[in-house]
Image (cartoon, rainbow, N blue to C red; front, side, top):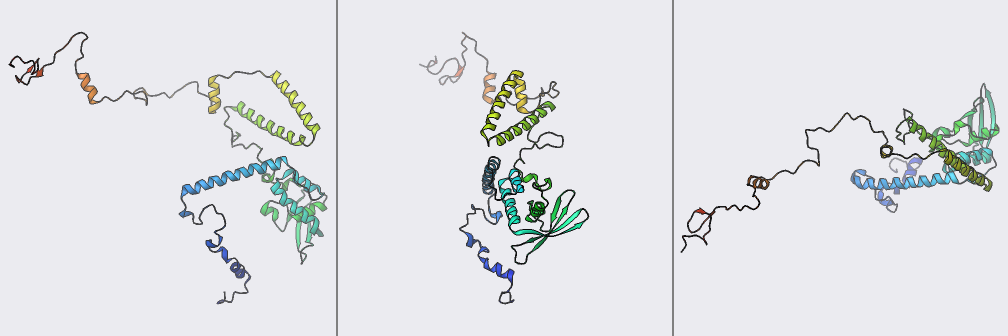
Amino acid sequence: MLRFDLETNEWFGKCYHIRGSWVPAYFMDIPLAGILRTTSRLAFLEFWLRFDTALKCQRQEELVADHTSLHTTPRLMTCWEIERHGSLIFTHEVFDLFQSEVLAAREHYDVQDTKDAGSFKIMSVSDQSHPKNRVREVNLQTTTMITKCSCMLFENKGIVCRHVIRVLRGAKINELPNFYILKRWEKMCKRDIIYDGDGNPLDDNPIDYVDMETRRKISVARNKFEDLIRHAKNSSGGLDLLHSGVCDLESTISQSTLVVAHTSQQEQESFVGSSFPTQVDILTPTNIDARGTCSRIKGHRDKEKKAQPKKKLGVTVQVPRFCGTCKELVLHDSRKCPKKK
């Protein structure tokens, strides 16, 4: 920096001030779970175990966040209806970002000028808190009420910016248009059924068309029942009404439906996810020994035993033996040899 006269360069100065982050030794106190910066030096199994653990923690945090968004209500900071509408739609994490934009639009922003350009209105929104009173341009289409701001926050992050909120407030629009509600930011984004190209749910493996329709109806009914619980939990009268309605519905359904016993084959087909064919065209070949049914391989001892004649019951067969005295194959041994004196 001294050699090339870069002391006054803003970018070089900023990089030099954070030089402690250049060398890993300066952030050894930061917990990195043992993962090295050079992944080629890390064993694949060790990396996979830590990656799987991190993924499980992420899923657990996601479940907790979903439960919090569905069953709790965030605190409102203004009396604007657009903020209340955002609290009913967005998750808590996204609503915090949206709420900060609403607060900024209420406190520091105002519409300075408005120009008509056919079906568009060009509005200049100024920042009263900025030293130079920075101005952003917002194009409002009067027919669809869709706006486009020069800050490009919605196009970049999917969050409605403070300039657009101020313009919508001036146009007396108390709810966010559907254009600004992205599906990924909604509380109920995971409750919709996802279908493949053939119209079958991706998470299910239906046996036939009737089974597929049954699964769809069950999913829709479950979502509606969860919505009823979420709306009725805020009042005791609503819970009592829901409880009495469910009890009446239970008695009605139990009287109108009959319990049908399923056979063993139907239970197996339901578990496998497909029906068994009535006609089998592919059979096991008959000229091969299937595994588990073939006989034991015969050894040399088995062959010797098979070659020997079988003894008859009650009949003693004498086998000639070598006598050490007479040196012949006879029916006696050396102890009983007649030639022995």
